[in-house]
Amino acid sequence: MTVTVREVGPADAEVVLDVVRTAFAARPPVDPPAAALTETVASMAERLSVRGGLLALLHDEPVGALVLDPVGTTMYLRRFGVVPAARGHGVAALLIDAAVAASQGYDDLTVVAREELPDTIAFWERQGFREILRDSPNVELRRPLTTHLFNVPDAEAMRELGRELAGQLRAGDLLVLSGELGAGKTTFTQGLGAGLGVRGDVTSPTFVIARVHPSLVGGPPLVHADAYRLGGIDELDDLDLDADLDDAVTVVEWGEGIAEGLAESRLEVRIIRALAHQDEHADLDPRRVLMTPVGPRWHELELPPTRRAPLAEKHTEDLLLDFRPGAGTEPADLDPTIPLPLALMVAVHDGRVLLVHDTWKDEWELPGGRIEEGEPPREAACRELREETGCTPGPDVSFVGVGTVQLGHERRIEYVAVYRTALSAIPPFEVNDEVDALAWWDPTHDDHPGLSPIDAHLARIAVGEA
Image (cartoon, rainbow, N blue to C red; front, side, top):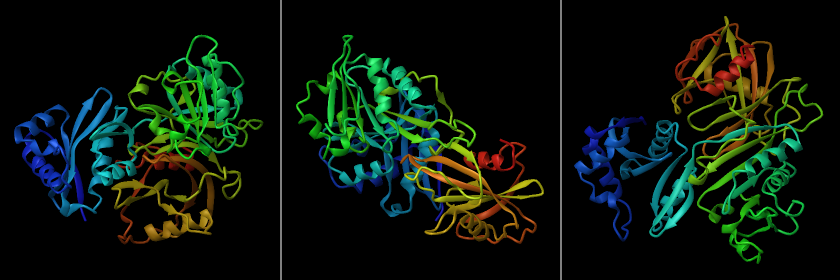
């Protein structure tokens, strides 16, 4: 299967229209009918004249299309469709990936689906889109493209981050907090309460489900809720709170996947334990806070000064958040709530690093892959090197360290273990199911074209260039 996606403009209106009509005509009938079925070549050319669109081709035949429609800092995906004969080949997902790449500089992607088509809505949700508005018969779903990262070395810094953010909050705002038990969610909320000037001590809401803290300064009250014990967010309205949520700042702990229906826009705040160096913050328990703005309310968020860029990032929304150099022979002292499913090998020969070209992702990366059940990370890295490249690791395989990554639109947090070895012999390469080419890269020079920025950063760490 060969699927390619290319950008298109007004001159391609006829072929885009043909794909859109075929795709929409195959959908279940809705009332009123989809407006896409009334498009003409002229109207499609006018749409494509604004920002263009994307066309997917399977074996050079047009099979999928969408129109890019920027509105403010949001990129709407209009007339999205895949012809029936090409469904099940990953065409839709590739179109979305290409839309993400084409929307750099925008805050989010937005689609409008029909409520009569629950399977379509479920598809968008699997692609990282969250419902923000329902205006029958339309459902608007949005996928954020930006995550902001903050260093938080101790509890007081966590409170200060909350205080700094509180100055921008207003009635009706919703913050959804997630993180393991003891991560710092309540500490962060204490800072919010101090910044908002509310009455009462902010403590964990675990045993009371929700508390209302009235303002002492004429501002909005703070509603602090624990969604862990709620069957659904509708139960929050049944608690007979002394505050209307539209008039309050609402903070919901453990609210991911539950609290989204409370407001059109929300700020998702995730707190994870940091991978501090062994000699750094020895007496502290540092955290990383990830803030993801969802919806137009947060587009103009002024970021607190403790924000920092990730160590590396990809246009697919993968982020390298942290890296801790190895102290020993294997990963240790990791957060047990974060999985370690991936091991990579930095294989060096004559001062250059071996790269593999991933057939499916069409990307250059380091050899490596998933750790099998019960398999030590070191053995996984060596096995993947042999399977992908045919090379045998040298006698010395050293542990470089472990990184924390946030992956894609799902924003999964995982660890990755990194190893290094020197190759003494390079056997002939044979194409396999995962890799179709090898390359050698000198990490002291510019990035290799098409090389994953995350893998490039990890390789430079391994050879002492980062």
